[in-house]
Figure 1 (cartoon, rainbow, N blue to C red):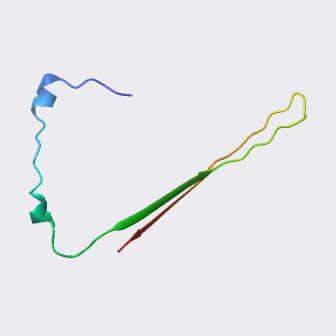
Figure 2 (figure 1 turned 120 degrees about the vertical axis):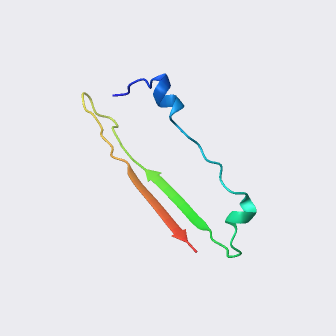
Figure 3 (figure 1 turned 60 degrees about the vertical axis):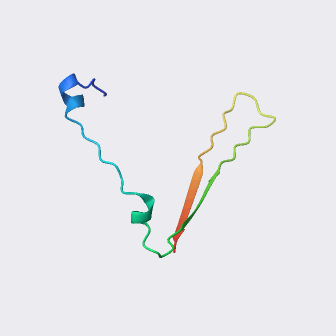
Amino acid sequence: MRRELSIAELESEHTELLPPRETLFFGNTNWASVMASNSSLALNAASLYSAANSAAVQTITVSQG
């Protein structure tokens, strides 16, 4: 359940800027390859008063180098 924030709570929030991109770059290469796949199949053909259910399968692969 969400509740509304008061003005005092909003004013107490602080933000910080990230350093420039040059500062974050350490000279090494760091990359991530992300692949996602969702698949689901349901068949309800030539039948009366029946229901077809399907559960989705999700696969996520992350490789970082």
